[in-house]
Amino acid sequence: QVQLVESGGGLAQPGGSLSLSCAASGSIVTINHMGWYRQAPGKERELVATITNSGGTNYADSVEGRVTVSMDNTRNTVSLQMNSLKPEDTAVYYCNAGIYGVVAGLYRYRELWGQGTLVTVSS
Image (tube, rainbow, N blue to C red; front, side, top):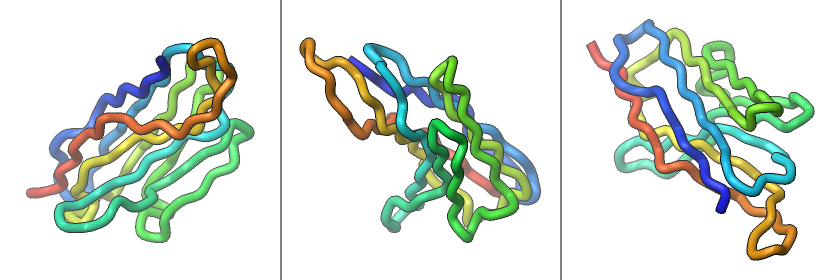
């Protein structure tokens, strides 16, 4: 089984910084893309940032210029560096990955999600 395990998150003050990491493990052949989404209380899950295995990135307008997503293809990890944090960045952040792997002996593509990690921005 392939799984995503997140780390990081926690409490930060407005204007502060926080870093999130996510590692994919299991029967991985190749990772197509990885990224981060977030869900604030009472709101739908939304894109934060994604990155492809060739380095192409996509950022939500709300975080552009304050957030950097990076991917380590050798370690199957994705990181999110968040700076100049705002209270509206408070949310549960979910790691996402599109992974080609082996499932029950068969080559399969799946979109996977991590369990989520809470980021709270408050003074």
